[in-house]
Length: 171
Image 1 (cartoon, one colour):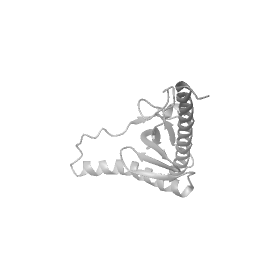
Image 2 (cartoon, helix red, strand yellow; image 1 turned 45 degrees about the vertical axis):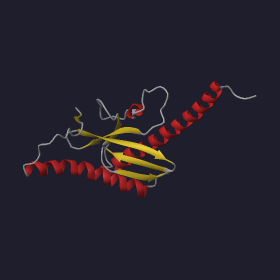
Image 3 (spheres, one colour; image 1 turned 90 degrees about the horizontal axis):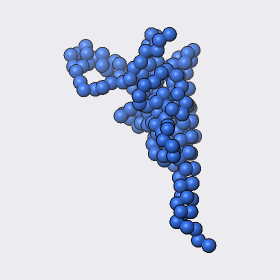
Image 4 (cartoon, helix red, strand yellow; image 1 turned 120 degrees about the horizontal axis):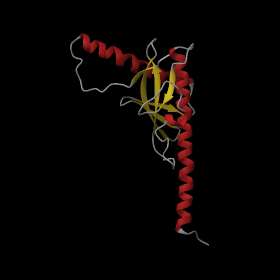
């Protein structure tokens, strides 16, 4: 007996749901790995990196599933997923949000930092490939500040760049 059209759609939706959950869980695992490794890389003595939503208000705490662009979408979509990293940038408690967008293709994870470079991790990721990404994240944040200081010092700091979300955590 052949399946009805509804049964065939249901079967396809079931497979889609399995793949979308796999996509989400692998991206979430990589995001948590990046958060933990970046925090240790920056300062192993304090919590200095948190997973936060990619848009909107955030606090320097881990936001759990709310840190991902697919949060609250009901049926989990099968698409690239963004998340934010709140990175401590001062001893006064200032945190900058970096937005990373991940796209899984086969055994590769492509991670785009803001609107900049894309980095590739082979899954499961290893310490060497994560270290390359950590160096890129550090350089991105460091150069964001030093580049703007340089532009100011040389009289060319006027631009239409909106900049980053930076918040101060009150003690």
